[in-house]
Amino acid sequence: MIESGIKVSVFERNYKGTTIAVIQGDITQVAVDAIVNAANSHLIMGGGVAGAILKAGGRTIQEEANRKAPVPIGKAVATNAGKLKTRYVIHTPTMEQPAMPTGRRKVGLATKAALECANQLGATSIAFPGMGTGVGGLDVMDAAEVMVGEIKRHIELGTPLKKVILIGYNSELTTAFANQIKRAIP
Image (cartoon, rainbow, N blue to C red):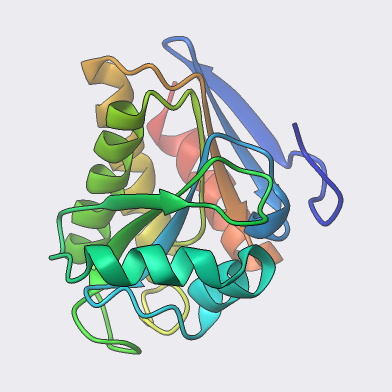
């Protein structure tokens, strides 16, 4: 289910029963079981994707996140989704402090943790932003490579996820996601 504010799927591939789709648009407008917030360990939802989620979903998301913080890199927690079109927001840190640089290893750990959290929730669909590509400063190609690699491994291990959506906020990130899926997934 794709809502207004989301462009049509740029690329889609089925891998072992899970559809991996790439679309360009606003992650707060997608209707899936869970969306991912590339957080900091304090779960402070200031700018970037976190700020957009907070603005669209409302303060109840931040209030619940405050009760679950701090969260180390490599772990993830779920909160309510407020007024969003999703059931959960999965908060997974890519950095310890707000507006800190991040790297490939941290993005990989965060992606893996979000996927594991989705499994625990029984989610069948999840949407990811470009983890670490905003204030974290990670190159979009590096982020795409790490994220797609973790998603592929997760699917290979077996998952209830039937749809994984990678959402690019711009054409550069959207293209990086699509190109990486074409390279990594037969």
